[in-house]
Picture 1 (tube, helix red, strand yellow):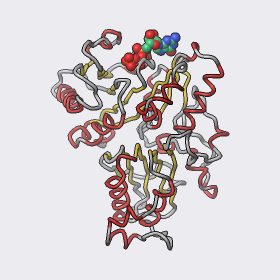
Picture 2: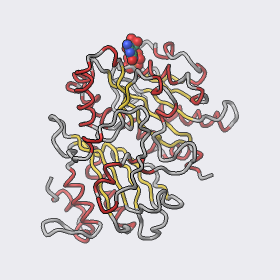
Picture 3: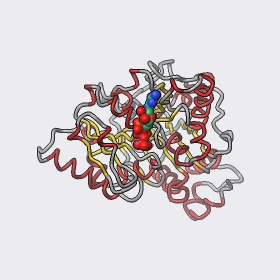
Length: 388
Ligand SMILES: Nc1nc2c(ncn2[C@@H]2O[C@H](COP(=O)(O)OP(=O)(O)OP(=O)(O)O)[C@@H](O)[C@H]2O)c(=O)[nH]1
């Protein structure tokens, strides 16, 4: 098996203060499919209480109590993951099937994701599976209006769980769903009151289908609307999401409203689809420029890329801000009938047109008023000249 398949999947469970992360985790840990899961909880404040509230599998819980996981104890998170791996390899603990990191409610998830992806030692043993964000039905709308961290938690999510639905009026839940859909058009929205939400499948956000170990790019990229982008090459109608318990408004999806201003936020979610294989150098320069010049605005990027050096073996890219997982080459296309490059990007303050222009410049679709690849290679500083 490849090292990537052996790598322990890491899930991030986030959500604003009091949203219901610990409650959901308690329910999840009762699922037998989540045995052999280590839970890393961090707390903000002097007194650690959350570990007392998490009932199950107490010896799997590692608490980072001296501060916020996202900033002050970042080093400690990496140390904790390394220590877990060491204990697994020396037989002190059973092999883990999964690690769940519950962040503090005030965490920006990006640095947490980066700790998993960006550290070369950690990235050998672990792979980021995905981000599950809990949003409180009662307070969600006002929290999103007032707290930047909450916006980022929603924008970066692979799954959104609405908690406390039974405490809110139906109107409020409908408005909240619309707002979530607006901020993150791709993540399935789930009703946290439903028992089936608290199942291991909630965490299956990663590239590989856990049952078959085969890459499921459609689900991973959450790319129904990527397929819709190019009507000449629409998928054959099969949807990759697990729709059993998600409330997915397909009507909304089709209209590509993603580049509208989202009620005052400048978060965007969009996709780039490209038909021809891409020169590896061009891809490298595109990604390097994007992340070096605009890394902080790139909340997430996931991609499957057809490479001209070996178009039969696509490249997988997964990045958070300036930090990317080591790129991975698949043995073949997961769906041989669709060999297009597909990229999904979530940005903040980085407009879709700008990223598209940059991509076009590197992949040979220059426009008169934009520098082409040669110009960018000769003078990378020309990039800021691409007007935003
Ligand atoms: N009725 C109801 N109450 C909930 C639900 N989820 C959480 N709660 C309550 O909301 C409060 C906060 O829940 P927690 O699970 O501690 O939330 P948290 O996100 O872990 O909180 P912090 O760690 O403080 O950020 C508790 O009193 C829970 O009992 C839910 O789905 N329904």
